[in-house]
Image (cartoon, rainbow, N blue to C red):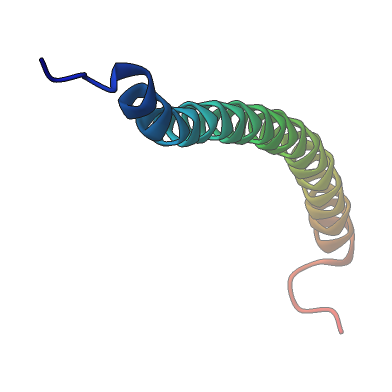
Length: 82
C-alpha cells in the first residue's frame, strides 16, 4: 500500500494561499484609502466651488456699482466733455 503525503501537499500550497490572502487584504486597504482620498478631494472641490461662487458674486456687485457710478458721472458731464 502506498502512503499519501496529504499534509505535506497542503503545507506546500499554504504559502500561496497566504500570499493571495495578503494580496487581497492589501488591495482592499488600497481601495479603501483611494476611496477616502477621493472623498476628501471631492469635499475640497465643493468647498473651492462655493468660495469661487462667492467671490464671483462679490466681483459682479462691484462691477455693477462701478458701472452705475460711471454712468451717473457721464450723464452729469455730458457726452462730449473731456
